[in-house]
Image (tube, rainbow, N blue to C red; front, top):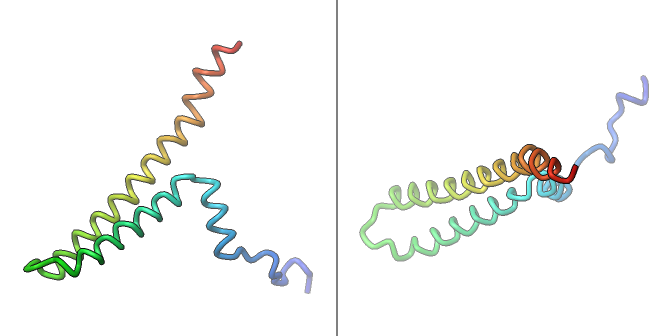
Length: 97
């Protein structure tokens, strides 16, 4: 057997190193995760004071708010990436020539 087919522990990427790599690739990734955790935490706190609202409706509202925050963070990250890769080099580097 060749050594290329053997498994190596060095090739495995750990959870923390993967999170750090994704944070470098997309700076709004941790913002989306933090917002998701904040919305879910707030929703769980408000669960105690939901009065006569059904549990299923409360959970649906909480889920929609958390997903909305994550989608918003990803959208802002994509727009920032597009600006950084396409708009900034095209307009700001041309004026330096």
